[in-house]
Length: 110
Length: 116
Image 1 (cartoon, chains in turn green, purple):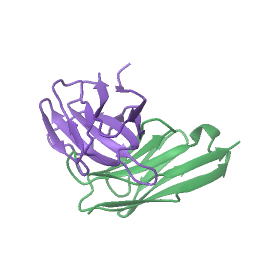
Image 2 (tube, each protein chain N blue to C red):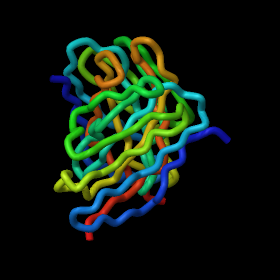
Image 3 (tube, rainbow over the protein chains, first blue to last red):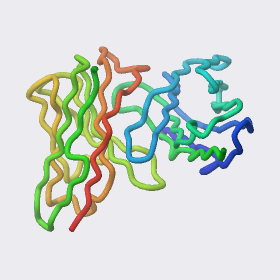
């Protein structure tokens, strides 16, 4: 059974204080690892897809990296508008083979 | 703008009542999904559909039913057999390929269902 564990559950940062969110996974065969952002009361919004170990992707203050066992979402100099829950998901094949983690709730204080 | 529209935003169910959640997309996507989100848990798949007039059970389909009569629409009915329906329900879509690999999901804004 595929498993995804995200840590920490919650993270509070001062504006400008860089940090990383972790997503550890166990899958039978990774087809893709996804990062989503979810604001309160809204649906998740796609951020990145990573396919193979060593791959990196960036978008504004966010950078996602992937190893064979985990992925990191690095947040550089965060702003209050980066406050959200960040979800990690893995696809091990097929429409029904997507497993989501429980998310990391990020709060950025001005 | 293309996207997924879910309605209503909030829904209340009485004991023994069936309720239907609406999901419409104008992204021209073939695949559509229903997920359930509970506090402290990851999203769980209820049903998915790869093509019109076809759908498959996900991990927690008991107490739910769906239909896919049109490409744009994928309504979810929460039946009275679902004993713990209180949750945030999310509809999603993806382009839809033969395998369904590596497809990012586009989500609606969700429906919060509560029991009276």
